[in-house]
Length: 480
Image 1 (cartoon, rainbow, N blue to C red):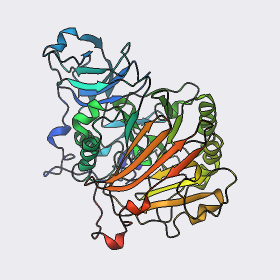
Image 2 (cartoon, rainbow, N blue to C red):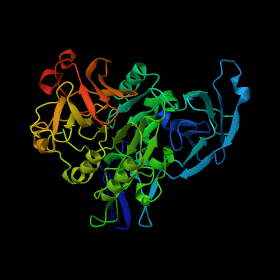
Image 3 (cartoon, rainbow, N blue to C red):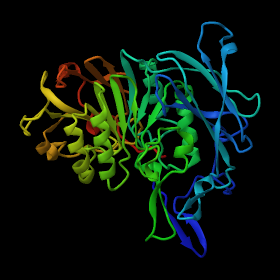
Image 4 (cartoon, rainbow, N blue to C red):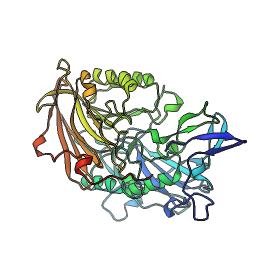
């Protein structure tokens, strides 16, 4: 549900009705939502060179205005912590009950009565590549978290990571199993791409409480690369005429992300790139912006400057929609030419609450391709996926409406939660999609030659039948 705010009789109130306590006085809370003097919502991200730095964010209650974090090499010695060094944290105070728009203070109804929270972050620099480190963060004096272990990026060698589509709903019930299954399958994953709509209502603190609890210690060990989805935005304004969609005021305090110079303020920490290793370069777009031309120009420049062997773009809204009655022609018209010009290898998306994988053929191939054939040369592979329980029907004609661009739909699904593992080793990218029970659903390999051309291979006969609403359990939506 999108948030909407109106001015009436001198008051601004929210259309969305929050969950309330039994006495009807304020929003219902859960024990893990309460901020305290102890650090919580601890998450690792990347906003520097991932081979030599680690960024950490966490939360406390509003009384903790100064705090710190410690880091040490994760040695086998029982008291490895004797080598730890400390770093003072940056702190931001956050009023959960109000936000600002156009200089006007607007109440956030679903956070009514919640006290302010403080959000802290550090970036540990000067670390060694491909090295396991242990860190901990502090709330009040002496109120330390446990020690988390995380590894810096390698200067060479294979990299494996996790990709998750929309979580959004069932964050306290159905989504946690996906996060945990992904970790069980890939405990050595170097990072996790969250392709937007991490929550359903981006400024509702309760939903973030569920999201962080679902990730638990995984968030602190495997750095997140979060993408802003439409549900991380809300509509704010004093009247129907001036309401605007703005990024949730919880986004930037919770995630320490790169700030791309030259881009406007509204895109800060939502459009960025991460050169994870010599072979892997990830570019993050904010597809919630109506005019994507500025981002397309940025992406064009960034791709032209990148010499990474594998270049991956992630954003929320798909280039090729798979959900019924959905399409993003304006975004496709601006972004697709840039992606094909630079032969982007992989595009990871969400939004459509279905599963779709397909490829655009190499230049010169017929637009009338029916499917990617084993060993065929391809330009770019596109994936839409969903990790949460909210599910949509697949587009009636698949991707046939996009055939003129040379794309084919090679694998699809409905009514299924997924997590994806992507491994990159030299000239091969190995992509695997799993269902929540860990079963293999999709698998493909891209191989890149010295001149940059890519071939695709997949043993489709080894894959299970296509999952549709008509051959799976009856579906009922899961609330946010």
